[in-house]
Length: 89
Image (cartoon, rainbow, N blue to C red; front, side):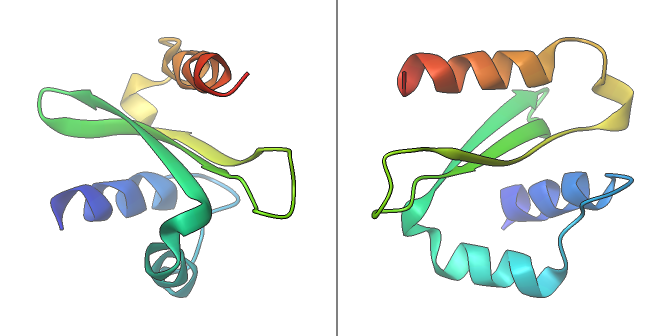
């Protein structure tokens, strides 16, 4: 799937905290408790935010926000974060 590949590519562009292919495979397989935000420009994902809301908790956890290096410092990560806070206060 094009979007999954783009998300993994973005994650791999992180200097630290990148996930292995195994972790991504497990995430896609058990996606029920995850919330994925994507930021698209010109038909391609340039950023994403990944959150989890475990059923036994009342707190949402930010797992990662990744932005394509060429698009950093444009406030995209902040927009993803603010959008999530608006949806889940």
